[in-house]
Length: 110
Image 1 (cartoon, rainbow, N blue to C red):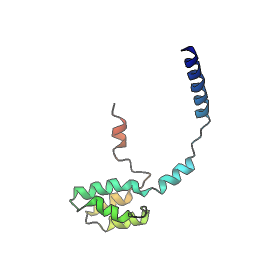
Image 2 (spheres, helix red, strand yellow):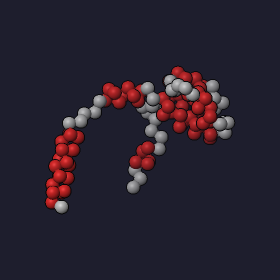
Image 3 (cartoon, one colour):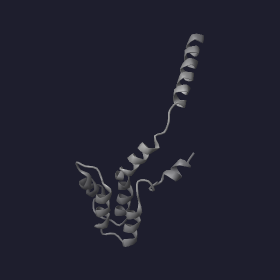
Image 4 (tube, rainbow, N blue to C red):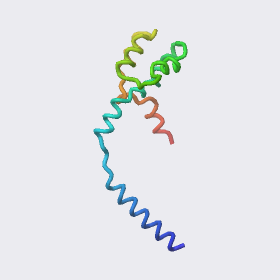
């Protein structure tokens, strides 16, 4: 058993050393986030459901079939929805960078 624990200790040290060498590529993360407008499908669907618009998931799926969601496509889609202007404006102000959904409250749960 001592040999097994010894190998584990060496492996843990090597892992910690390797993790210490990792660096965050903030530019790549920012670029990925700025190009990921699919994140906003959740709040758009939620507002559509709140006002009883038909088939929110299917409408967004039709928008994205065969391609990703671009900023312009999503804004055009939201602008054409039959929603109160205040809700449209709130959706149009959202970006992948500032939309957090329920993440803050979920992160605080034990």
